[in-house]
Amino acid sequence: MTIFQAVILGIIQGLTEFLPISSSAHLVITPYLLEWHIAPDIGFVFDVLVQMGTLLAVIVYFWADFWAIGRETVVNLVKGRPFASTQSRLGWLIILATLPAGVIGLAIKDLVEAAFANPIATACFLLITAVFLVVAERVGKRNRSLEHLNWKDALTVGFFQAISIFPGVSRSGSTITGGMLRDLERPTAARFSFLISLPIMLAAGGLALLDLGQVANLSSYAPVILVGFITSAVIGYLSIRWLLAYLNRHTLYGFAVYCAVLSLLVLAVAALRA
Image (tube, rainbow, N blue to C red; front, side, top):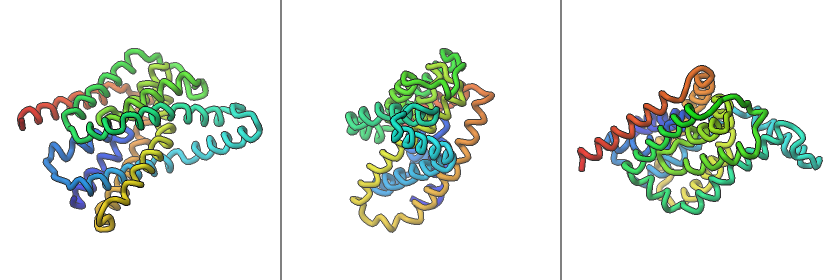
């Protein structure tokens, strides 16, 4: 992998982790379309650490929220009143929304890993993201705010997050869809989507980091990995900021069209190369 490839893939990870167009799909599809033959060992290491870059972006952007939620959750739990404040209640809802992805992800881990090696399957899953976004716009009433979030909302969003473990099914797209199907406002659904991303990204990143110990010559990849990490963190932070502002005034249809077009492009290229 070259520095140029690291910058491009870092930008792609930073943009697509939070925009509802699937970062996993783009990390699979981009090398496939450009015919970049990246060694599997460095590809694995790079993917893990650029995702840690976008995790850093979430933490930095929502630091005040996470701090308030964590503090209130612990303080009110100690007081024996776990749901005494909006922030502590939100903390428990974030935990509840995280459970489905954790349970389902461990149950079908091998199936998901196989999908990551298949650009055609990834393209098909990308069409699912497009459908989700259209359904969210057509069905959701968009009349509820974060203060009105309840356990049914959290579980619904959590199950949609579980679906997104497959490459091509956007995590932000599916969780925003789940929130909008529960009639949350677009920015509210997006904000909750970003908040629940922290536990699942921490867990996934932690498991992946354990596997890094098995990679030979890890230090030799340091310059390329560092470039990708920094790029994904900076672009990820800017993407969160942009999307939250965008969803105040715009629909998800543009992202749905993009996902559908990219999916069909990959399927067409695969057919031509067959």
